[in-house]
Length: 327
Image 1 (tube, rainbow, N blue to C red):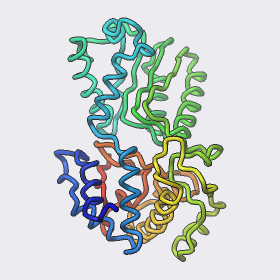
Image 2: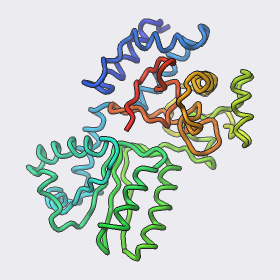
Image 3: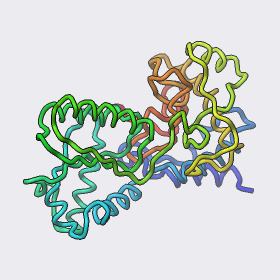
């Protein structure tokens, strides 16, 4: 049986490059201080489940570099002459908030230089493809906003756009693409949109039975949780138990249910103790929908999205596992 010390150190090892150079490295002591905010009886099994989940959902810098190296040479994307392909790509710099796009372009620039002797600045003089590169797509709001603004303005009359992220969530992709297509139609331009990713996280209501995000099977009997859900003004969206999702992010349905229940209860407590969280910061993660939360467990080495459970990133007086950088 794995003991507490090994679980704490194992999680610290998994996420050791989280915001490296910006914050102190996450160590076993930090993980221990964080988990002690949960009831004594659930701390050990919660640590065990979190170890399994983060081994699949934490995206390290090395994982990003491996993904981008694959993209750079993928015949499905670049064909048989990758250097010529990339010479004809214009890389979009559209983000006005945050540094994720800039950081991804920096990583990819180094890969292009190492593989083909190219720099991003040298590419795209006469573009056949426009690339929008980012770390991950959650709700899709930022990508949608950036590209709609570009389509209405600087985009040419005809273009092919590749949206490249290491991970995306199915519902966010659907909403983003739907609104982008409407903007294209309204513009009168002929713009083709493609999505490229390593991991697609299933979070659509229709496919809840095989979803890869936190969706509670019941609302806990905890009075605060009951009161929060009652106050949403909408019937709770509940998952039928019995499945760990297509990507098997969770070790078992029992482990998944434990995480869903404990993160939901604690997330309601966090909402009640942190006065600066707006109404969209749901216990299981930020969403405009009147639910218990977005429920993603995808965390990158750069940052922890607010679409993940509050218990992972919310601050004072809660003690976060992943201190979050806001734009």
